[in-house]
Length: 112
Image (cartoon, rainbow, N blue to C red):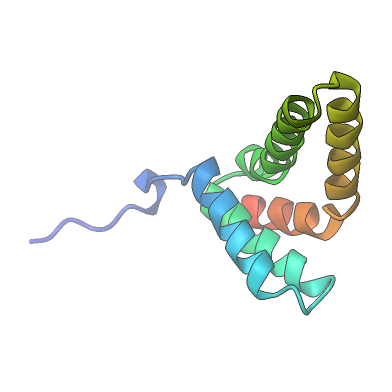
């Protein structure tokens, strides 16, 4: 006789999977300004597997992108101050538009 399926022992998910799903769905649903980000956050939060993983999956790309822009802005201009200003500016712009994505990720992480 087959053993019953236990839902508690399933794998939880990963931050990387959540980030990828959020990015793809955000790009596909860009034409729905608030709802598209909310749906992307919800699906990414479910794929991340938990609330804290979902929150990390929301903020990690913003931090990495700002860091890369800081590095490349400094390297290309030769003036570290320009890279720092560009990196901080990009981080603020990304975080300013992250609200619905974060709310959706928290809801998806709770339901995962």
